[in-house]
Image (cartoon, rainbow, N blue to C red; front, side, top):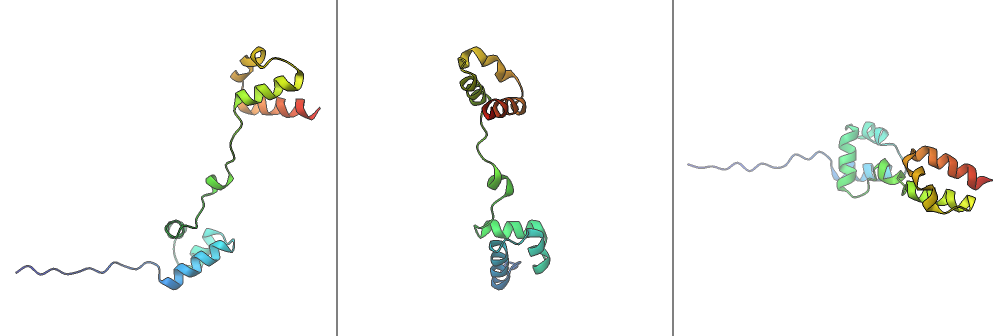
Length: 108
């Protein structure tokens, strides 16, 4: 005899908990604070918020398009009235150094 036992999925978040988590997140509460409020881990809350379509990771929120080294060299060249091709070798420098030079030259 083959008897199947149907399993009901475990409910980690009730509808009320989900609403609370989403409301708190939209109100600007930290994930850790929300996790403490609902008795879950921060990772669990992040996963739930992601499934609900409201979570935005910090890296995606704060990353702006980084200016390329070539663009920085062009900016430096324009600021000093030089041909960007003549300063191409500057691209071998670090990005941070090029940003400092560009900021210093453009500020003058």
